[in-house]
Figure 1 (cartoon, rainbow, N blue to C red):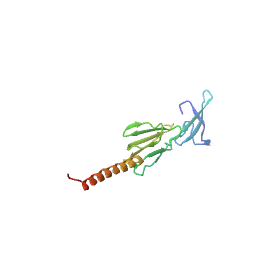
Figure 2 (cartoon, rainbow, N blue to C red; figure 1 turned 90 degrees about the vertical axis):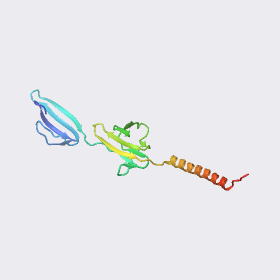
Figure 3 (cartoon, helix red, strand yellow; figure 1 turned 135 degrees about the vertical axis):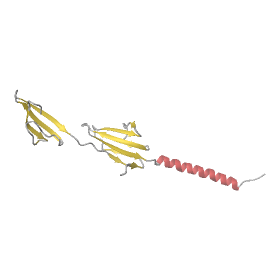
Length: 161
C-alpha cells in the first residue's frame, strides 16, 4: 500500500486472507477485494482485482509423445476469448476457417488468454499419404503396369517382314 493509506479488509474469492496494514500477498490465484482507506481524509476505497497465472492448454489430436504427426493434426481446447497463433516453418498461418493442419512441416501453436498467460506447442507433421495421394499412387502404378504389359505383349508378338 502506498504511504498514507492502510488496508482495512481483504477477501480472496469471498474468504478472509492474511494481510497487514500495508501489505497483502496476492500470489495465489483468485478474485481479491481489498478495502483500504486514507486515514487523513477518512475516505475508503475498494480494489477489485483478479489474479490469473494459469496458462491455457490445447489438445493436439494426431501428435504423438515425441511431437510428430504422420497425418492431419486437429487443434482443440481454444477458449472463446483465447488467441491462437500458428506458425509453419517460422511463417505465420491463418487459422480462420479450420483448426486442422494437413500440410507437412514444423509448426508452433501458441495459445494466449486475456490475462496474457500463454503456452506454446511445437510439433512436426511428417510427409504422409492421404486418401488422394493413395488414389494417385494406385492410378500411377496401374498406368505403369499397363505400359509394361503393352510393351511385353508387343515384344512377344513382334513380326518381322
